Length: 200
Image (cartoon, rainbow, N blue to C red):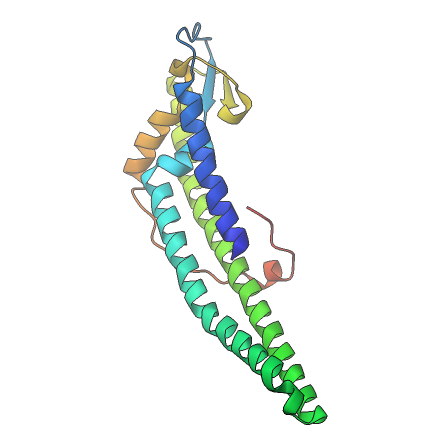
């Protein structure tokens, strides 16, 4: 769950950084370079209707997972405290059995948490892929309409004339083509669950 919280915080800071970068744009942005266009995918994911729907739903799913895992953590912590306070009065064999049982429950809870985290990461990746597939033809159309000969990633461009940015138009068209996304937590396919989950 910590990884998901960190990812959410990073996404929020990325959007904030993008906003501050826009306000710090120079008064004279320079000429429009013919044929050069720029697109900011992170801003589309953060500001489009579908992207915001994904973020809101992922927060709900993460809360559901946290609610599922919390009773395990509470029970394990309670048992550990009981063993700490009353362990000295137990026969050695009973104490050993209870410690082993507690260790096994802790391992099972850890495995469940790892499974749920992988499911959430996979679910998020699949929704981002759906947005990417929806915006791809939009970007192709904008590229042709604007007469672009080169499309740059905004993250690689320090400053530019805003007239070369296709992002706002892409967001508007995506909002029409894909106004929202509805989904539930997805199980990771067997062939992927055997591999280490890629960080997103």
